[in-house]
Length: 223
Image 1: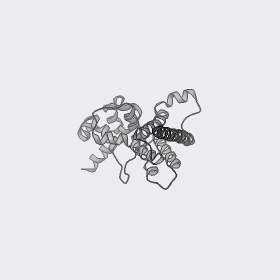
Image 2 (image 1 turned 90 degrees about the horizontal axis):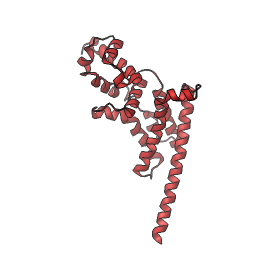
Image 3 (image 1 turned 135 degrees about the horizontal axis):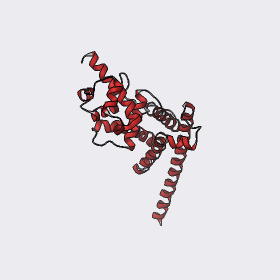
Image 4 (image 1 turned 90 degrees about the vertical axis):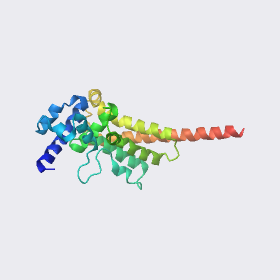
């Protein structure tokens, strides 16, 4: 591949990641992406076989030296840390990407939009990329609730993810209700701490309730 061709491709990826993040797949036109990338209108079809192919490339692209930017793998890969700290680090990393700028942040925002507004018909690779934060979160929750059922883990994962995605997708309403809430760096940390504490407390209560129910069934079986 010629250097100029590679440069055009990278410019298209960067422009698309920003516009898909801010406008969604349907709101970001191929014309707008090409214009922002400084490329001709046919470049997207040439490099990515169309806008959908470009969208998939944004989700699956990993910059050199990085395994992928959508999730917060650093918390998953530190099993020696307390579970509550690993969960907070994961949530903080995800929220930071959802409120940041630059390719890795835009990529995370595109994936978050895909979770809420699926484009449909994507490759398995692109779907797996969008689901990566939930897969990583499931690993954390299973470590926190080692004896929980698959159903309990699934509900916990969806509850935590729902809180994180709410702060991203409903930021306009949040700001309207609380004008001082702008999700600056300090606010992201406070929000991550709250979601982690709230979720840990909820999972602890659920685990205690499950154990109580199990004991009740065991006693009932003895009668």
